Image 1 (cartoon, helix red, strand yellow):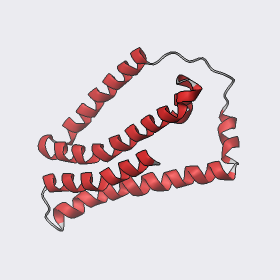
Image 2: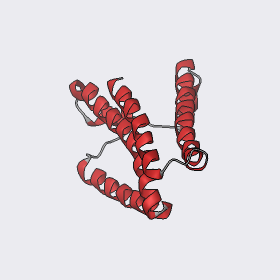
Image 3: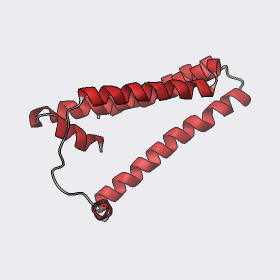
Image 4: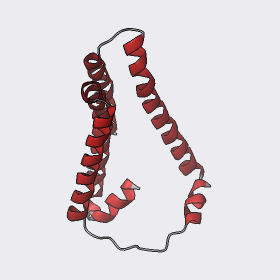
Amino acid sequence: MIAAVTMKLVPRVLVPRALSIVFAGSAVAVALSTPVGTYLGAINGWREVFLMARVLGVIALIWQLIALSSTTPSGQSRLGTLFGLLKRAQVALGIIASIFIFWGHFGFFIYLRPFLETITRVHVSDISIMLLDFGIPLARASAEY
């Protein structure tokens, strides 16, 4: 969806640049959010991290409402259109691949921290650095792609 919205917001000649910026920003956010969230959660507790995320989400929403132009629909959309797209093999495979990538990525983060804290006795600040070391190459690879 982000690609479709981006393509609608910028002139046609700027679409490749806009898409690379959007996807690079998304990759960097994913790579940084887990280590920073882990570190802040260890210092302040997970409830405070969720409160900070909520505040940042509201700020981002307000910024989008101010900065982005209004778009008009170019046609009528139906839920059946989505299911029609899933009948295309390339679309279905792409969605399945995305599901497995996110599933594996976040599953890795969810189970890695407790393992490192309890089994190997790694300190939380060291875990944050390890997660950052893991995420930066992923973000760089996504941005180059």
